[in-house]
Image 1 (cartoon, helix red, strand yellow):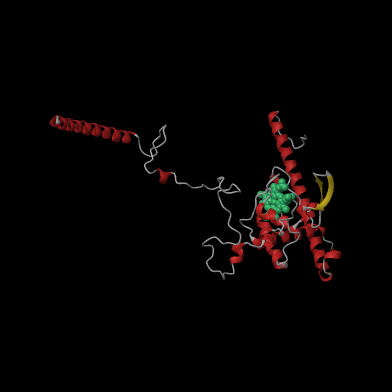
Image 2: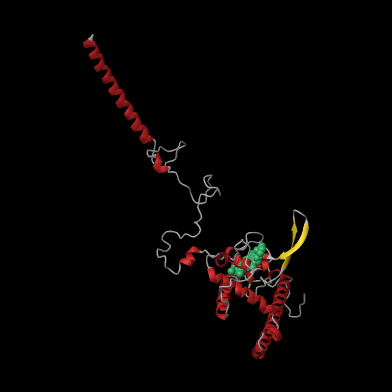
Length: 306
Ligand code: HEC
């Protein structure tokens, strides 16, 4: 029995070996026919190290239930500077990294409402206005035009008419009527559109609703955006100013002469434009008459009138 048993055991193990070899052959063949990366198959690909392929992580801009606000991307903690931004605590530029001054960086008061006027720490002088003018002419004039009436080269092609910066609602101190939904009563409050903080916000972040305006925060940072706001006010003042009340006595003659020159240039340009338009129209009519005459197989006559 023992011998038989041993014999049987040996016999079994040989069979087992053959089965194993056959199985492994099938496996290798299967593995090979399973294809390589980038081959197309109906089934999900084989993953030999799944935790490397599918490591737990959040992709940018995705949602999560883990954080209360539902955002996977975390905003920087207030009062901290991202690692590598600056290493020196005495770096004077740290204030700019910290962006802790909501009035200067966001144009808002502590309670989140828009500042009425440019932050008091900013000195608005002629150099500041010149900077604002330069930035305005680069970033805003294409749409809003150099004068702020909204008829810039791109602005004119916009699907809606662009706002006019000289409208009352953009002037400092403008009020607006709002309806209290709870009591259904109307009351007047200072208009948001009249506040410097709001203009600053529009410069940096654009307008999300209506005709939509892109933000220019990538190009106009901190005081540059405030310089544009200051120039925005100067543009408004330029249309409302009175020589007798807004211009110092010693500058009045100079300003009057400049206004006179600009007015004459405007009239000359308008006359030149009208003359050119009339000439073009005459030429168009002449060509049309010529064509008609040719079609009628008659010689063109300069007397032909439409
Ligand atoms: C590409 C075109 C474009 C450029 C450039 C542009 N804007 Fe605008 N802006 C718009 C449009 C469109 C609107 C109207 C949005 C609406 O209220 O529907 C607008 C609206 C505004 C308003 C009024 C917002 C309101 O709530 O009534 C202000 C103020 C303004 N822009 C300022 C600026 C300043 C300052 C710049 C330069 C930094 C600038 N814009 C650059 C297209 C532009």
